[in-house]
Image (cartoon, rainbow, N blue to C red; front, side):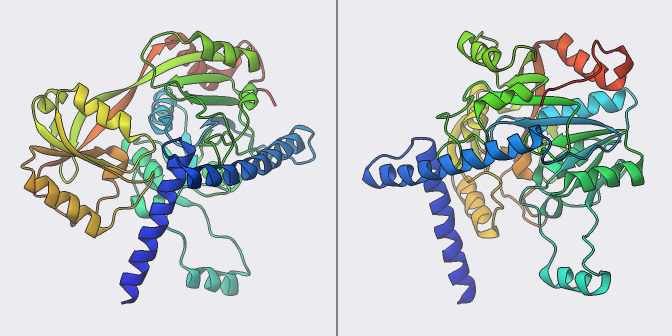
Length: 405
């Protein structure tokens, strides 16, 4: 009975969250949506004031960042979700590691499993309230945590980047210090760190989704902006993601209005191959052509994922969408598997990020694969290489400081 009540409450919460997302993106109409949108807008004004006050306090040195004596690279965005940040972090970390840097990726581990309450109390009693050490997802040689305990993106990065350390903690100063002292890291990459001001980046890489740069240009919770657009002035490099290669003069003009110095690099997320979720089989993209497939995902922009499948020639017979970072229940997955089998599908396809959330002991009656995406620099290759070189060989850079307050 209790389990049913909890499941019902969770379903109502999920529906409310989805309704809120629909209002933010303008997918709902009517009086209720208008009233709710007005309520969210009032909160947006309050949130904007808090964000700008915090930034001002750091700029005036009333609040201080904490240098760690190590090169720090910040990768982040002004908006919530959907910019394709993880593949950019992966490409950047791999490029640095190949040039001999000891790289540690610092993540907050969004929606990772928290320490049990009883263990928190026991630590306070036995260690005088000493905070726990950061979670080590990868020590550079072995992946030590699963996606539930590490978070989706940290686990993906750890699995795809041998030789790179991945460490999770909300306090990135603490995790950065830990990476330096315990593992000898000489380069720290702050994953989703543009708003993390206590640890200042030597290079700030700002990602902007070219297909939907700033949403409705409102702050959270009425819009998707985490901070005002004008704060792009802190960026050293601006990565325009999901680009189709066509120039967008209006967007570039806006970027230059707030930041005249940052290099602009355009990149696209390209499908690379299919990988079996519960095995090692790899298929080329041509295997999708003419095939009957179903798609399910819990990401910020499922339209792009589903669009890739159609562009590759697949006949997408059904789709199932969940909120970003949704952790699938067994009941939800069983329903998807049953629907796929009943439809006589050739393949069931999900995203790489979603694949890590599927329990190992669950088997699909239909071949289950994830679509692997990789970053391709389509304009600004030299600027990307320069960014890597400025970190690996700072003595060769044109200037001694990077980024602006």
